[in-house]
Length: 259
Figure 1 (spheres, rainbow, N blue to C red):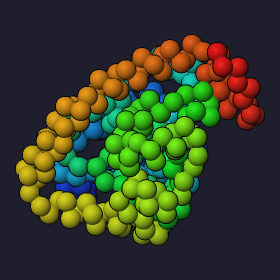
Figure 2: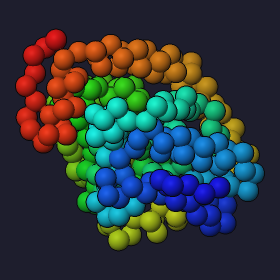
Figure 3: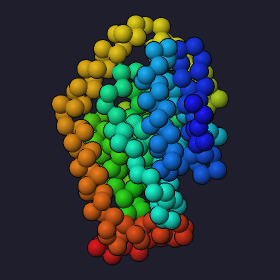
Figure 4: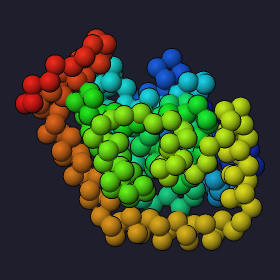
């Protein structure tokens, strides 16, 4: 299948997916969400593909997350796919591993996309943040839930409530990523890890992921994400939400009014 906003490549049993909007730092809008959801559906259904590697086009960004300029314009009439941000954040039936190769900054939904993968390998130039609070949003695409589960609530709260950016070294220290490598070695290392996963029993990996998925469901993650969508809809009605988006587009400091 051909796509407009992502690129795909197959090497043996490994699918390489590249978010391909470098002109906007691979920011994701509704059409790209749908393409990615379709891509992961195809990946899941193809018995010859055992592992995927997800990265971003260019050398600046993995993905800047939500395309706020598209949001400010009203965007497309298409809504977010049921599988969530980048077709991943609300997907709980995928039994194949995805490796995030974070080649640059992963902001907001970009960080959430990486957290929705199974293994995160970061370039030493990568940066991470959940800066939604700075623009009138919150990390509703699983950032609140996943980051607090992965690195502990106390550390996660500080990042989510401040929206501050961390570099790759701090991300590794906190446990946000599995490994940090020089930028020019990122894809080689991601492919090496992908081949390592592809060398073991794919049936065993599927069984392992089935249990991991069931644990996420048992912990109430799907319900929590649904509630996040409800809260985000309420937030979208506030003056602060509208001001945050407009200030971002106009490249100015927001004037918060707390209503």
